[in-house]
Image (cartoon, rainbow, N blue to C red; front, side, top):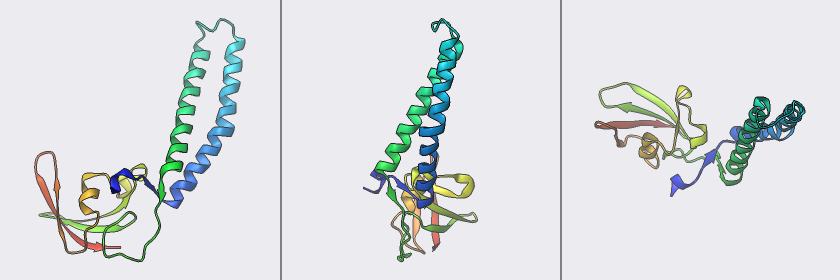
Length: 155
């Protein structure tokens, strides 16, 4: 099923790879230095600097693991010649019943950003749009009512 797969763009992959490199080299070194300094202050049981450095280290290692998992398990979005149906990477212009036109790009969940009109393929609207063609009507079930949209254009 489409929702079992994580999708990322080439740009996002590059960004994650750069972040991972920074975390593994620069940030790890900074935390090791913080831990060494905190240890030099003495009693570790009541050493706030040491406790903070340990928390920072745990957060860092968690983020490194998260990025490695994303990079290992995700599929890179490729531009496709078929723009007849909505798919990952598509820019879709829709019209809400009784409302105006909206344009969204369908992206993987790690790249969704409503301020940039990028919606996840796992969002209710993204799921409803996926696989449909221009001029089709889709229904999106909201918390209080079902909303009707018409797909105007797919790029």
